Image (cartoon, rainbow, N blue to C red):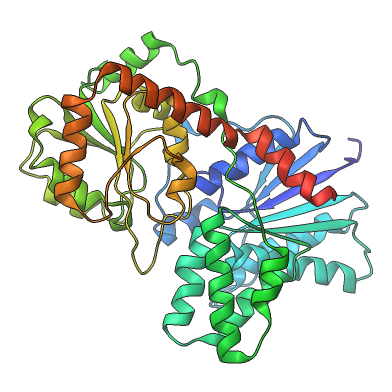
Length: 419
């Protein structure tokens, strides 16, 4: 087999993890094949490790295949039980060093600074120290959990050393990117706090260097859906078009699932529409317990990527009342943009974090944590909103979401790198 001429390596939590950024990696990988990269690799974790971590996972038998030219690598851990931690990092780093030892121009993109940017930085350092002279460019993309979970938790706990390591790791990359303007602002604010405590200069570096690259979405998977396919998918689930409110996301407190279940109990429209909760996550069992006496709340834990847009297109309204929590703030909201592309009923959400960037002015907005306001908003959309206004919101939402189409986002991201 001939040697590749240009390689892209993405270090990420890839499928089957239910995570918007695993979808980001897939979409960037697919576009890369059309932009001169003839070897694209996703460097990720063994399946058993993902299962042991308790991460929400998609059904294994219904994962979408990648195009030829994209290789998913899951290096096994290095060492035995006497190495209690770091075994899998050693496997990932070692495999990347092997790739960098080949004379192939390579771009390495990391999503999640912890630990994927560390893996790339360590691999590049090792490859250069070994004398391989890799032709490599590194891009670190800070996603929501990097700031709201890792950096912010360090600052809350006074662990400024850990925050310093994280910011140093981020800024060691050739290019540094944030998933939204909100995320960029949070990075800078966190850097200012570290600077004030430690006398460092992270904030000025972040202001000068951090750019924004929104999540890339495969618009073709959501546009021009066959109405017959939508109706058939709903029938298989015992649903009808415009006969349900849809929550499709990770089932977690920060996504507002508890607020939505409580709000549904007081909605006037509950006799006309069911509440469908599609997804898995840490709050799933608690949410089920809350809804155990309400047979109009339906839980779907096996929705795959093919069925997702069909459920979105058929709903009377899509509700994602996300709210800020100490361990998570919605820094964009990929599912909101996907829903906008699919069409269907209006989006009802909040202005938490970067959600406003995802929906623009095309959604019905409620105050985060306002259960009564959420119930009223859904009632207005389902019972009182005219067909004309619903259609206007749908058209405007789709036009806004098209700015996140994966080829457009890829070209913008790599145009910045070229400059």
